[in-house]
Image (tube, rainbow over all chains, first blue to last red; front, top):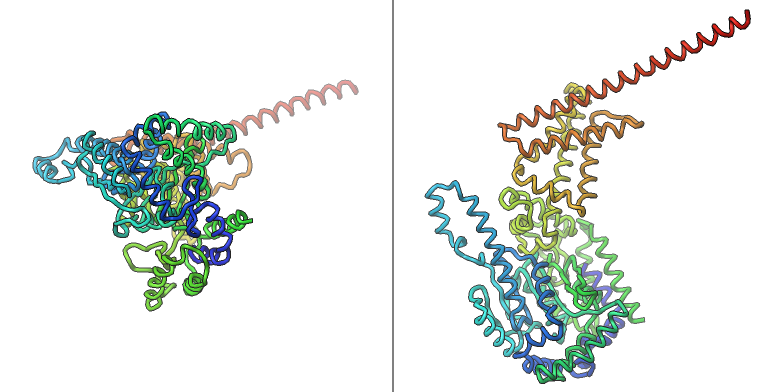
Amino acid sequence: LRLWRCRCRALLSRPAAALRAQRGLAAGPEMHFGFQTVTEEERREKIYQVFENVAKKYDVMNDSMTLGIHRVWKDILVHKMNPCPGTLLLDVAGGTGDIAFRFINYVRSVRQRQLQRKLKHHQNLSWQEIFESYQNDKFNNSLGDSQVVVCDINREMLKVGKQKAQHLGYSEGLSWVLGNAEELPFDDDKFDVYTIAFGIRNVTRIDLALQEAYRVLKPGGRFLCLEFSHVSNPLLSRLYDLYSFQVIPVLGEVIAGDWRSYQYLVESIRQFPPQEELKAMIEDVGFFKVDYENLNFGIVAIHSGFKL
Amino acid sequence: KMAAAGGLRRAGWRLWRARRAVVRCPQYPPRCALQASAALRAPSDEHKKEPWASSSQQHFDSPPAGHQPEQKPQGPYPSYTGLGGQESEDYESEEQLQHRILTAALEFVPEHGWTAEAIAEGAKTLGLSVAAAGLFHSDGSELILHFVSECNTKLSELLKNEQKLVQLGRAEKKPIDEFLRDAVEARLRMLIPYIEKWPQALSVLLLPRNIPSSLTLLTSMIDDIWHYAGDQSTDFNWYTRRAVLTAIYNTTELVMMQDSSPGFEDTWRFLQNRVADAMTMSNTATQVQSTGEAVVQGLMGAAVTVSNAGTSRAVR
């Protein structure tokens, strides 16, 4: 497996690297920031500033740009994950906590159903057994020991996320960690699921982020990536382009007072590798059963892989 | 051109993965390790080289001492790929891993039903994360199909061993109705540990998505039973026999679902009656056929006699 990849890489290193350079991915100091060319350091800084600026209006802008459909996309992602109680989730670039909150809701409802089934089962227990079941911690835990760690590189986004959590009443099972997706501050083999929703586009070195994802996942763990992708249908593609470049920056200016950040956003979507290429990158890092599901004809795609 | 090269690389990669069903290749890993390290140390402008080379370096240094590719690893959990790029000796294909997870999941079915939860618990016992249940469909179809196919395999084994005993002369050859009855009973007894959740499984098997696979499994099982019963028909009988046995099997299964008698006696009695019915039906069918033939012959004879009488009178 790896042997073939290494051999192939040695043989075809030059063309592959050139291909990557074309995609603006770490073949040297030249990188893309939207449609501009910048160095790696500059790119990191610029992206940090973009999200610092948009943090407070992030959710509002999401709703207005995608007409609220982003909520459905995130719901589909968590349904696809189908987490059972006891799952440890790492949500990278999870800033304002959308995926984390959905995960907690899902696990809570699954846990409710589990407890109901247990209660039905418990109709014919002796007093001793009932007493013992109350002693058992799991019986009282509404999340069943599931936990989600929200990791983001941007302090502002995390701040907004924490405020939202407080506001919506999410207290248990959440942690907020400041960290870089290319260099996660976690040990190996820790998490059951790693998700990155609309964040991998902003990572400067996607391959490093994928490697880190592989590292922190337990064997059998799942990698899920929700991201804007390429639309193959030509008619839809033209409409989508029209909407992206004409409407979204204007919305950005009107609602958030920041034209440039939203210009960057739509440009970065165009610069991001298409579905098949991202799938190949994920396979390269060592994930198995890598697959993607197009939502809305390719406007958004969910990539999934397993560490086996 | 670059796109072609990238495509070529990926095509080769896919070809490799397609061939990945190989389970053991004793001479392979040492060469792997050597060539992989050589490839890694080769000067290239690949950005991935640095982090890989250092970790693989460590990885290659440790195994050579205890590296025995022919030996099965004794650890509780075999790893499938090391981060350093070296294949562990016990690398198996994804299908085999899925097979193992499903087998492990079966013991949790009485508690959780045929669901992704049971699969998650099964994965946990193998040392994998619960997220590995995402490898399968969330309604548990693969688990049920796996179970059915396992049962069919067990039944085949059973019948084959019986046949061997008969051939060796150590057992009597059973009459057809007894053989069919025993085979169906043996197969249905395999459901007993899961009988409470089996109705759920049946309904999942009837989902349009699963019908092709479940039908194939059913027909191959029936075929197996008739084969070991000694059926060698090549005419329309082949179809009628299989249709009859399928009907018997399905109806008995349904009776078993709601049977609460001790040891499922009612079900076995029902099965006996159905098989007896089928035998009677086939006897009746043969009788009807031979009677019909006799009647036709009689009529033909009468017709010939009448025509002969007519011509002889004409001659006179």
